[in-house]
Amino acid sequence: MEKGKESDSKVDDRLVLPTPDMAKSLADDAGGAVSSETSNMLAGLERASGALLPEKVVAICNLVLTEARAAGADSNSPGHFPPDGRGPTYDFYFAVERLPKSAKKDAIMAALTVATAVAMKNTATLEQGTSAISRVEFGLLRHAFAVIVEALQELAAKGTP
Amino acid sequence: MNCPFKKALTRFGFVLAEPEEPRKRIADIVADLDLHALRMWREGHQTFFLLIQMTIFELRSFLKAMALPDHALARHHLERASTLMLGSGAAMRIAGDVNQDSYANTVITSMKKANPKFSGSDSPDHKELVRTYKDIERLAGNLPVELQAAYARFLSAVRTAIDAHVFVCAFHRGEERPSTGSGSATKLSGVETLKRIGGHWLKLLTGRTSKGENKCPFNY
Image (cartoon, rainbow over all chains, first blue to last red; front, side, top):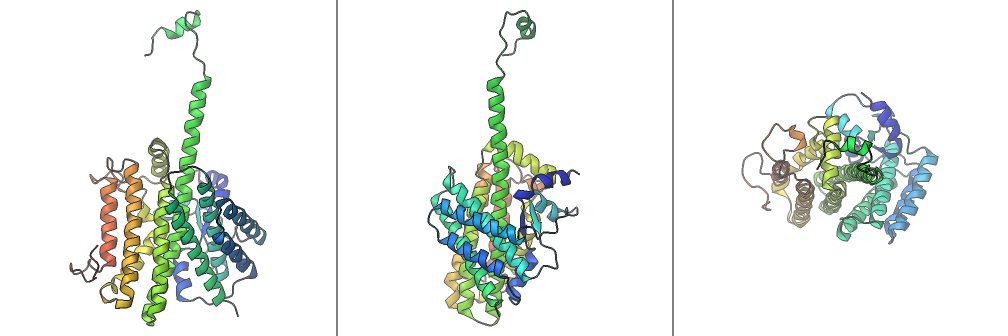
């Protein structure tokens, strides 16, 4: 299989996500500290979700992603190729990598924050161009991103001593 | 029409050779469209997965609040889940916003290369979402009055997300061919398959799967 080659060329396109179990565990137990880097990135995303112009959203998300790279929050994936199996193949096809099982709350929160910044940036970039996506659909997505940021901020606050 | 003597006639100067440039330009445009299609397909799905993960988080938080019971908190999480679900439908529209030929020739081909029965139901996030729906099923017929409006909105959001999938599938001629997940082993079209799966989710969420009776006050 040529997975190695393909993956190397897609490094910049990949999205690191928690496993669905981790999303569940966040709901079950919100305990655990959240680093100041993650909190800062979330504050940046709050500004982005309040921005009216898509170009402003892109600019703020770029700053958040630069911050994430500096903090190493965008590279906390296991970085190895998934074993064979339909689920991992599905993830591999869409360039999704999962956090290792040992990931703690801060790593999960950081991954979700970076993933939100990537999704917001991609959507706002698309909003600036020509597409068949309506203003209503872009509006729904903006509202959904704002909900994610709000939920993550609440979770971060629960981890603050 | 192709002339069998064209090569020889061109060689002796009776016919001028066609310039390669326009063909190359067209090939470049097609290649760009194909790359764009693959990128939209991937980015739209990545956004979709994030929204589904956060929907799982909100629905689990809803279940936890119901167990307390804290109905105001439960409604808060349910309303958020509805917004995220509506967003997931819009993300699916982005994923499918590519030209039909690029989808048929490049996107489908790449999916089948990854797995001959490439299916959205293989997504780990999708599997967990369905497990969460099954846990919600038990509550569907017993929701307190103050939560019923929020629950109706959530069901409506789920239907909108299903409709977005069906729209994308139909736009890419999914009424004419079987779903990629079936590996062409069924006569059901992609659109019919999606409608069936979506119908099953709505049955789960309205508590109509186990005893064949509609326990939920909302008829979906």
